[in-house]
Amino acid sequence: MYRIRFHGRGGQGMKTASRILGTAFFREGFEVQDAPRYGAERRGAPIFAYVRASKSVINERGIIRRPDLVMVADDTLVTIAAAGVMSGVTAHTVLLISSAAKPEVWQERLKFPGPVLTLPAAAEVAGLLERRFIGAACTGAGARLVGVISRDALARAIREELAPLGEAIVAKDLQVALEAYDLMAEHAGCVTEGQDPPADAYEKPAWIDLPFEDANISAPIIHAPATSELVPTGLWRTMRPIIDYDHCKRCAWICSTLCPDGTISINAEGYPVIDYQHCKGCLICMTSCPSHAIRAIPEQEAAAGMTGGVRS
Ligand code: SF4
Ligand code: SF4
Image (tube, rainbow, N blue to C red; front, top):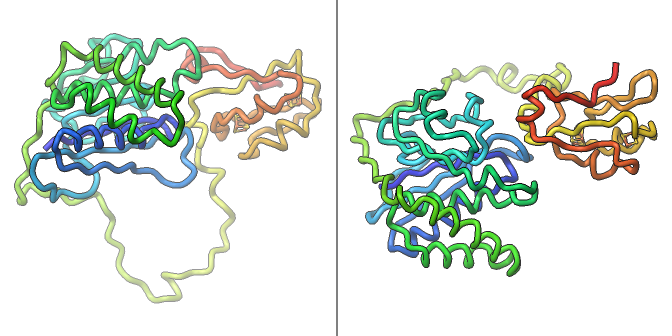
């Protein structure tokens, strides 16, 4: 059975990518499961989706614990333990990362036990708009790496799954997916089916068993205030809003009022200040600023030294 995991951020199309790859497998006569795994309101947050494909009946359920192929649409996720990119990988696992860095760099950095490939075409796209199609690139690359999906089956799956989005979107996804498919030609078939684990190899998930308590304890009245402030949702951000204070007119109520997370406060001088611990990078502030005083830069650039949005 093939066991494939897609890792990305909410909004990058990993759910759709897994769906398309599953359909392409199905077109080639495989039994298929595909499913995303994420909670509510996850734009920008680490999510994953997975595909199982086999010529036999699939009895396995739940998340994939021993993947044959792991595809990562956003290389900033690799270092986030909670994203689980490295979960269950073995020497049999192929890792494909969308990144401008070379495979050897990732191999060394991660001490990855199996083969590592990168998808440079997707990482080098010029416009932000193009990043919307990273899911299609992963789908095309994955289809070629397993070596059992024809170009035609991939194209049919894309048309079938994306038809409601209109011909222009379908055409762009087709172009990106087929380019990635061709790019992986020399690695075709490098992902092979993993063995089915024997029943006695079952590993109990790291659940915590809580004993039942009396109703007055197990259904307590909660007096504590909300704890959402303690969740660093800034971790989910892929693009960082930067305020250019030379152009800010201190109209104040627009960006700070429209920020859905309430992360823009106003300082004593009347300038907006972004709380990057909690800004999720939705960029509503940027699109609504009438003075065009807010721009966005990739989070990686920001981490490399560029800062903004803070005025002391
Ligand atoms: S909306 Fe623009 S001009 Fe108004 S306070 Fe915010 S950054 Fe400044
Ligand atoms: S990008 Fe702007 S509007 Fe969105 S959460 Fe961050 S500060 Fe708020």
